[in-house]
Length: 325
Image (cartoon, rainbow, N blue to C red; front, side, top):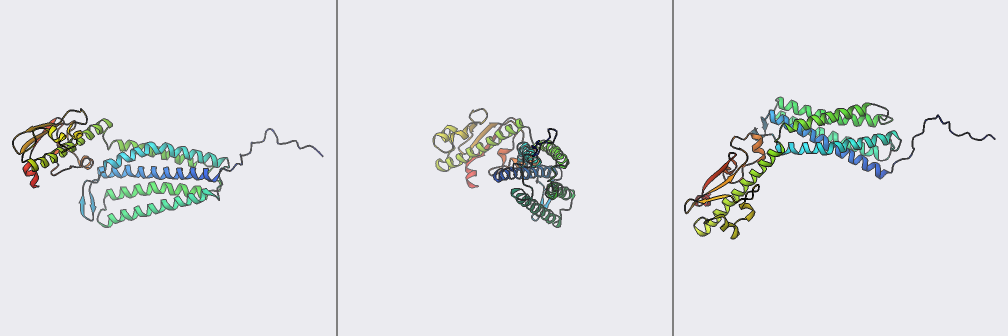
């Protein structure tokens, strides 16, 4: 009997043949589809806000709505794309490599079940969004805005559905195809462009910080105003100083100082009923656009405290009149 010479040194190395544990594959695919859905939603949100910004007129069952742009939605979408995008592509690479090595069972186990489940979810979301768009269309919103939003829905959801369907139908899950790489590069470019487009809609971090401090100043002045009103209702006179309010528990002491400088807000007694509150603001909100107003909603009785220049601004109030409101 001849000895077995063994494999030829020039033969191609076989695949590992080691099948990954179901729990590991489940983790890969759950994280992959979670980040995929998250990134798709964030991308669609950015372009929805771009459309809302440049085509602000919307017709709703309650009439015409002009302020449809959402500042915080844009901020959320940008942050989501920056964080989730790299994670999505990292798991995509891990899964593709495992498929090429034969470590993932393609036609049974975790992969087909979770893939078809996500495909069903993507189709359901698409149908729901299309129904919503047509609801607005029937309500009279048949404008450029409508067609652009319809296009966003079809592109984002259609991209996911087509890729998943091709991957599930291919015998090798596209392991030997260049389609995943090409679609991945295209998706990365779209996400990068979406991030850039989103940044054109919002303020710089420095401006956002300044506006946040100004918003807190306005809130603090409104709290002080309410405390003075309560003090007047009990003493029939306004307090002599802001320290009286803080020491007497009429308002939190933290609300009496500027959040940026730590200095006390300006306060001046004009008469038995009248007084003046002052704060130094960093931004000018007197001519805010609709998108800015959406982020910085006026709070209080008349919203005057949220309309100010980038300077020290004083507001005069009457405690007795405030009680009657």
